[in-house]
Structure formats: C-alpha cells, structure tokens
Length: 275
Image 1 (cartoon, rainbow, N blue to C red):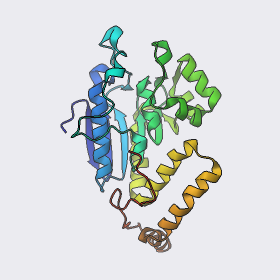
Image 2 (tube, rainbow, N blue to C red):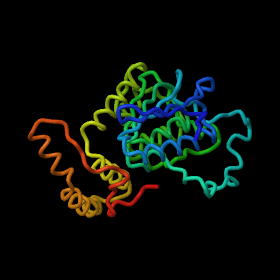
Image 3 (tube, rainbow, N blue to C red):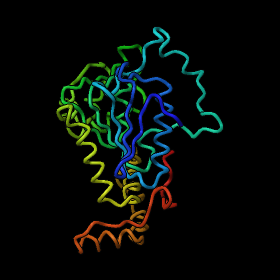
C-alpha cells in the first residue's frame, strides 16, 4: 500500500510510523486511519520488526479530527461499513498487535490525537504539548475505548475530570496523571521513544513480550485470580521454549541474547490473537 497520510520506516528492528499531514497539524481523516491500520498489520507480520514508534511530523502530534466537513464532520458514522472490503485486512489498533507500540507525542494531541495513542503501550509526551479529550466540547463523546483505558491508567476521578469537562492539559500534567510514562522537552520525545524501542528490540524475547502485552491488555477487565489462571499455562509454555534457556545462558555468559522464537510465526496456541 502506498502511503500518503503517514510514513513508515524500519531501521535496527524498530519501525517508525509518522503521521504525515503537517500542513494540517496531522488532522485525522479516514485515509490516515486506514493507512495506520495497514502499517500496523505490516509491522506485526514482519519478524524483523520488534517494536513500533508512532509520532507526528511537524510541530503537532495530531490536532484531532479534520474539521473540513464543517457541521457534518461527525455525522453519518452509522452508515459507514463496519467491515473493510473483502480483500482488505480488518482494521486494528496498536493494542491489538504483538509488538510493543510506543507513542512519541511530540506536540499537541487533541481528540483522537490523544485517544489513539492511549491505545499504545507506552507514551512519551512533550512537556508543553496541549492535550485535550475535547469530544464533549464538540457535541460528541470520547471513543477508542477511552472510557475504560483512561479510567484504568489515571483513575476514575481523573478520567471523569478529563472526559466530562474536555479541559485542556499540558504534557507535564499528563505525566503526573499517569497518561504518559514521561514528559520531556519536545526535541527529546522521539529520541527517548526510539531508545526505549531499541532496548526492547535488543534485549527482550519477542514471544515473551507478545504474551506479556496481551495479558496486560486483557488485564483491563480481569480479576487477580483470573489473571493468575491465564498466566500459569503461558508461563509453563514459555519455560519449555528455547528462549527460556537462551535468556538464562546469555545472562550468565554476559552476552547479548540470540532469541530463537519469532512473532507471529511462533505465537503460542494458548495466546489468542488481539485482532
């Protein structure tokens, strides 16, 4: 697929996806949504990709929905087909792939510009970036499961404050609330995200990361005993794989590990796909 609204680059086993409509502050449209989903499928299917970084071109991460349709911007969604064309892959979000996805929120993130990176696994944010779940100020409601995700990561009271008021916060406050891992000067956001992605690519077992990621997201609605039941057979499976031996031996020999398993090729049958 030839991309127009995004860029995709793979280096050192890390894929960087860049929202690429800087003249519109990377405003979100259906083309961008489709291309992001396609790029995530490609990253998930390529064994050499171990981690994904998502960022924006220019001074914004994503200024929210493209409002060029004016009053009709949010109308007609019930008429949009839920399923893609027969020859297209199903639409997916970052939490649904096996590889860690790190959002480098380099600038302003409004509406879908913040709910989309909330479906990523790790977030770095520019200290002075403006973040806003602005939906209720536009006459609609937050989406992309933000009612669940924001409440889990920031607590119910903080989620209510942000989602029900639609007020604007800065990156520093986002980090204080737990919405982001760390707030940094804007120029340091992407390098920090890439550094974390490279560390994952070099030092972690791909199958182990895929399992841990799936369990983390399943844990949003799981009790502690239920999660223990889910973990046990997957730990047993992993312990019998060559990567468990390699992880111990490489540590004892003080060398870089050489992992044998690859995702998605060696996805355990016990681990359901998030797609």
